Length: 181
Length: 383
Image (cartoon, rainbow over all chains, first blue to last red; front, side):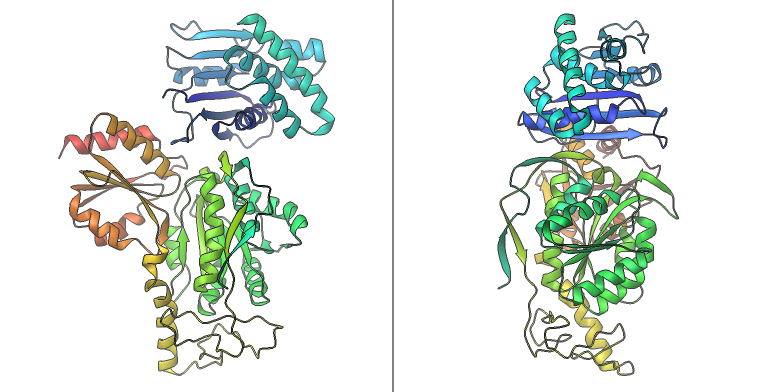
């Protein structure tokens, strides 16, 4: 696989899972990488399951979905429970929201809790930006895309009235990731 | 002037589009300036983006009352001189069949995008399938030929949309882009080039619009308002468009010509992609999103030294009979994974001398690479 990175972001509908995946994909484009992104979500706008997959490579991508995730980002317990089954025990990094997810004991896989929802509520008074906080932390921990590319991606893809809030959330999340790693 | 290079209206660079957005941009790049449609999952993003982007290019966008009206409106726009298209999915494609037959007999160049979902009926609106390929060929009544393309990536959704308009104009025929939900909703990096090669409709004042002595069988096409006395009818007509519904010679000449103009040019129209065919014992014949899974599966097995090859059909209709005949004479087995109950495999069986093995899935999910790897391993171990 070499440089190919497979990222799966999961949670429930309304947490911004799809947006987080799209922003990550755009960021990888800004970095000059090849990217394939796909989503799966239930019929309901809120409360159902949501999953976003991003495959990033230095070369053209053969199969565009995640085959085995290198990085699993989980924002809800049910999504964590479902996708942890597909995690290869070795080499996989699991990043979870520590307010929303009680992690299982896993041999091999490295698991990191990020206080995304907690920070979103207490520092920004908006739990909706937990997605960007955990994305920022994940990028700081893994370096899958550059921070600058992520900033540009948010600037391009988030509506103007929410832009500043999301950029702030990114900054907070990125710093959290730097501390944790 | 046939082919012309024009500047892309979208700034040339790298984008991160969904397949459906890429179709909309491909259409605009190919000079499509009329769109009539009715929204349907999983194709609606094409219509949505066209409705937003047509403002930038002075295009005309119409939301119609249904798909039957949509196709008829597109036919009208083409005869008024525009390049035009519509996009839909299974149920809408069914409603369009009457208009498709009319477009075939009146030799109206237009593009129809079908982002296939799981049928029959309203089926699974948000799920993937490729069950409409035979409908693309046989959906309307009578003997006619169309061109159908099968994209496997977001880049190809863009490129093939441009190609579809060029083929439509070149051969005066409806051209279908037979995408699927998985490719329509996939986001990928795509490159938009500065220049786009487009085919301009051939016009010849005074020449009959429905007949030609040229060997290619494609008459020039005037538009209403250009000073020609123009009759367009879906009934049998002579080369000037006059109804001749009782004349056996006129009918057979017309029907034969509209079929032969595609069949006689099929070597120029058909495009395929070959991987490791030279030494392959088992060849996967694949198209659309499934070909991405097939490519991955083939590469994994090649790493183990297994003699597997892949033929990807970029054009579904006209069918790539000659190359299937060739590979069917060399390979031991041909393996055909399809997100339907077995459609293209029937065509392959007509032309391949070797054993042809189906793999079919109709649960609304994609065929995953590991499924293909598992099946190919079994085949290779039982030769």
